[in-house]
Length: 396
Ligand code: XIL
Image (cartoon, rainbow, N blue to C red; front, top):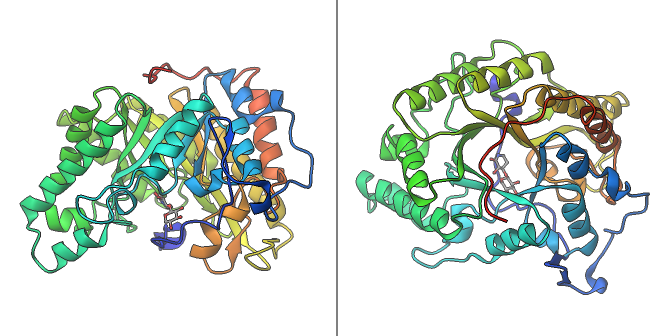
């Protein structure tokens, strides 16, 4: 039953078309390309931006961003002013960076890393070893037997060395391994996962070791969904906890756990349990990050994304706020990232039929109640939430 918040992934359906961007202060597209992306409402004053409020306790607030988002000046302005950490939503995935074997395209990743630097933001690298958004040449080669198990392992090693090496010293956290656990009770490492089935169970530990070799200082994360605050058995948290313990016991270089945080108002969820789960991970000596927060609900249509249930308008910001409060309570929780900041660019309508309204800005880039809830949570936190633990920071 735990498939309910499953990330049903649609390779290639990369968000709605963004329009244009500010890169290092330079507007890349003409204003004529901006359509329907102008904010019609009042923007929060910059002194009360999410990033500035969170900075008071050393917390980083982030968003997933895709390169095309930066082509819309109004979007780029929000990305720059509200967030202090950037996750490339697609542009660092293997399918994007090496579409043909040996032919690399770092355009989007480079642009996002440059944007982050220009705006004094950190970067969460996402993601090195995942079963989705792999290049066709790789999956085809494995399927037709031209890529053997040991060759597959060697290809991942080279991929990790190439990508982590390219951005060495410029990435704060890497999502090294993503979504290896089953949605069953009990949960376990999925024996049918592409990497486990084809390269063997040692591939998780190997991926972390290779990442450490390629960038000795970046914080290395295991990232997954439904591993914090689950109602019911919390089975997937247990599996993630066991995996973390096992890796640490083997001396594998893992520094943190990423809790994705894809919620849906139609399902139960426990913020108290989320806080307890974060504390449990922290008790292992790990850092924790909320990496992909969004809260979806049923909507009238994918364009306007008006909730069909009146109560959803309250439940959506409430769940965002509860997630943030659980995060704020634990000093080892070092970053809180939303998976896209505007409904106009969310992966939700294209992935979950009939659902949307999942982010903190509406389709016209007006801040929603969820934005205001996070803003007031962070304003209160600045007056009393525990300061975040110190971590490695890439040189400015
Ligand atoms: C999603 C992107 O947002 C979409 O644009 C893409 O089509 C599919 O992937 N879990 C993850 C992210 O770790 O990488 C996924 O991102 C969302 C679920």
